[in-house]
Image (cartoon, rainbow, N blue to C red; front, side, top):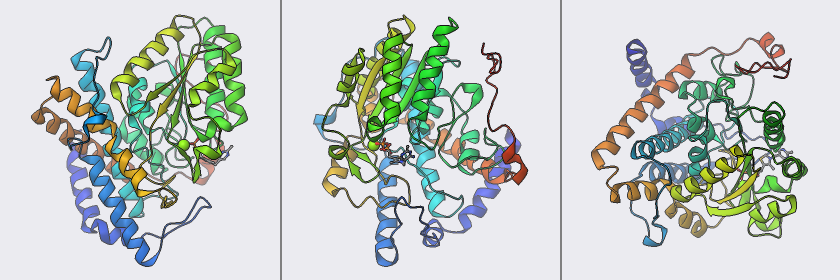
Length: 405
Ligand SMILES: Cc1ncc(C[n+]2csc(CCOP(=O)(O)OP(=O)(O)O)c2C)c(N)n1
Ligand SMILES: [Mg+2]
């Protein structure tokens, strides 16, 4: 470990020799059909805006309007568990902000799907799971993996498509997973994870195993057929599953009003005979209490719950999208509802946390993130023939996939 640290420091220095802004100006402005990064003067403004907003995201002690203060108690959550949760939230955000900058510096290919602003929706439930509970994340669910405890080294290698990624470098960035942690890899086709997690919940029930499944999806994805088929099946069989919808008001550049005539997506559960609840997904206390209850319900054999979490993505759909279809007022209001400063302020008010402890956490996590980056950058790219192996079946420890038990 110590050896890695020293090695890492050297490499970071080399990486930093290219200043971040100079490196960003070399960005290729690649397009993939999801949008295009701006060019020329607009590009400079775009880069400055991205950096300002990232700095804001990392400032977790900043002030915010009183109306967004959170209150209440986190049921059954010890002070140690509250701090552990904070660490997972800060870990998710710090990693995300770092990856965004590395992408603009051209250090990995493809694109990058940031979750900044939405972390509480994923981290808070994932942190409550047993290792062999099943998680079906989508493309904006870094927090599900960090929350469940997957090491940042594996996640960074996934972003970089390197051999040390759990998928050996086969798949595109941000499709985080790890078989040992029972987190499945998202499919590019949205809502496949919803169906797969529903299948896992069915498996738990058929095999009389204790596990629960958690599936994550976006507002736009709830208009997809697979969403409805999964929910319907889970309702019929009262499956041990918790469905999380992160309603961030946008699906790429499509506003919610063009996806559905509903405003509260929790009503979608009415059609399938199980409870649906709408909460502020940026309020850690509310997310904790609601998900805890839904997990208890699933474990107790009472069936699924659909939780709609109102939240917001601070950046573009992916990092090649300037997201200029949204108003600045809308973005600003949601940056004030940032879940992290709200949770930090509540922890401090309740004397669970102080400045010094927070600074220690932030420093340790910054170091962990840098080590993960070095690990990924030092990891090899896969050989072309590797793409033909392990494509269809992967082993999940403790479960024989072929025998089905
Ligand atoms: C079946 C399918 N249709 C379209 C796409 C392209 N696509 C990827 S993400 C996305 C938008 C999803 O929006 P939402 O569900 O709100 O999630 P968010 O990106 O906001 O987190 C689209 C249209 C896809 N990957 N798969
Ligand atoms: Mg969305």
